[in-house]
Every structure is written in C-alpha cells, then in structure tokens.
Length: 236
Image 1 (cartoon, rainbow, N blue to C red):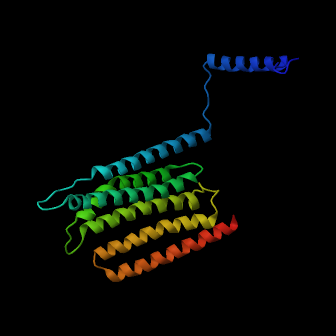
Image 2 (cartoon, rainbow, N blue to C red):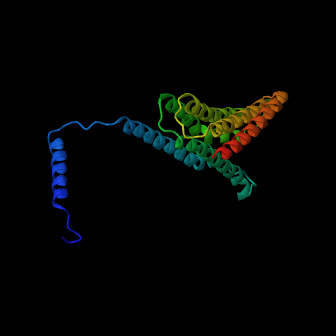
Image 3 (spheres, rainbow, N blue to C red):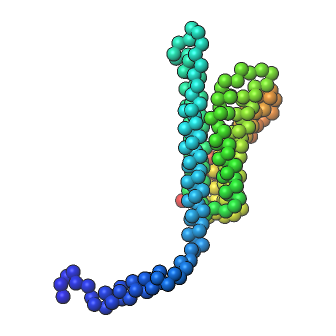
C-alpha cells in the first residue's frame, strides 16, 4: 500500500455518509436550527445594527461641519468651532462604542430586555452630533439650554449602558465568564459617568450645591470601581 492510498473501508464509509446526506437533501427533509444557532444569529444582527448606527453617527459628526464666515474673521476663526464640534462628537461617540463593545463581547447571548435597552442607546447615540453642536453654539442665558440638553443626552447614553450591563450580568446571567468584582467595577464605571453628567446638568440649572454633591458621589463611584478592578485582578 502506498503512503497516499486510502483504506477501502474508509472510502466506503465516506460514500455511505455522502449518499445519506444527499438522500436527506433530495427528500426535502427539514434541517432543524438548533437553539444556540438562533441565539448567535440574534446576537450577530444586534452587533451589526449597533456598529452601523455608531458608524453613521460618527459620519454625521463630519456632516455637522458648517462653518459660518463673518466679515473680518480669519480662516482659523471660521473653522475653529466646527472642527471642535467634530472632534468632540467623534471621540464621545467612540468612547460610548468602546464601552458598548466591551459589554457585548462578554455576553453569551442576548434577550429582549438587552435588545430594547440597546435600541434606546442607539437612538441617543444618533442624536449626539446634533446635541453637541447645540451645546457648543448655544449663546447662553439664565439657563444654558445647550449644556442641559447635552448633559441629559449623555446621562441617557450611559444610563442605557449601565442598565443593559447590570441586567445582563446580575439579573439574566448572560455574562457568567466575567468575574463578579469586575462586573461590578464595569457597572460602577458607567454609573460614574451618569452621575458626573448629572452634576453638569445641575450646574447648568445653577444648582451648584447639588452639583458638588453629585461630583462627590461620582468620585466615590470611581474609587469603588478601581478597587473592584484590583480585586478582580487578584482573583485571576
């Protein structure tokens, strides 16, 4: 027998298997979709939709470049605010995407609650470039409407991230491979941003004492997040 020859009984077994598969296909027998395949398809579609919305929102940051020239202004003065709006929008949306990617990467699968919270997040992400433009071009007044709207939208973004991760990690157990201290650390990171922008909202309403109190709460949340991440590293 030559080194490349295949034993006869292996050939016969392969032919029998091929004939069996062919007969199933010819007979029109249904091919059942297993549960884990369904979950994977749901997950893949959610990821694709999410990445598409984030990409469009980042593109809209460039669309929002609308320089308005005034008599006597230099080219730098004309483009300063539009470019600032673009870069701030781009990097804020990118930071939300990084948190979103981290959460989805550790989920075994998704369910209805995660999907609904994800849709709420995407609706706010799509608004971010417009909101940041309003914030940076607001003329101000007794109450800075631009700052308030910006803070509220950012609170919504990170509240959706926190709610989705908190539900997935601690209620539905969709991320069992993440160490508990690390899961809590990530949740506190999202809540830190929520409370921090809550302080910005209070400041825009001239509730300075409440803004200071919220900032202290934010610092405590950040400190707790760092401590929990250190505990998680010791358990690895």
